[in-house]
Image 1 (cartoon, rainbow, N blue to C red):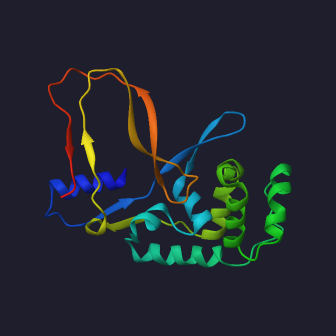
Image 2: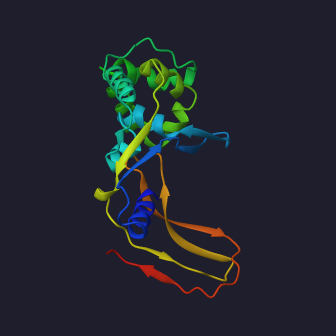
Image 3: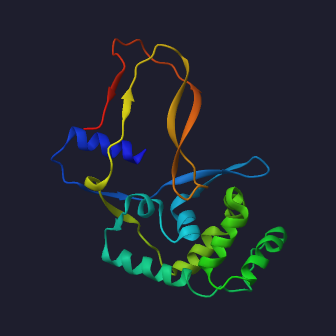
Length: 208
């Protein structure tokens, strides 16, 4: 929903400084085979699989602080370095699935791309128990991900503000899917919510 926020900001405050700052603390939930739901860092998940964060990929974000740039460059250097083929995933099933990919990979980048290509939507299930360990191993030192984004380069999107008295309805939203390395995709989500009566009518704000 970031593009929606950028659109509203540019419409309400057209003269505002277009360079905004944010800290990437985004998370997503992963459902495990036993139906337990855990929270994972989407920032680290994207970094390991793609070598860049969602904000870099989608909005061409740049790091705010010089020291963070050095830490990030060190991570990328490690990510592109030869894999440790003896790395232990500390689980027999994981080792059976991932060790063959590890043994045929030339770098950690190569390994993660092979893993995504082979397992795609199951990546979070496979990675949840060890992704923080391998991230720490590759990053070497803490990285503070404060970003800047130039919203003047971001497209305006159409959106509508609607008031309803009905408690049950289906509405089209943009849903975040961490398994797709592009970010957001249109999805129909059905949910129940109570609204107070209102005289506000439906209104659509179009691109300027």
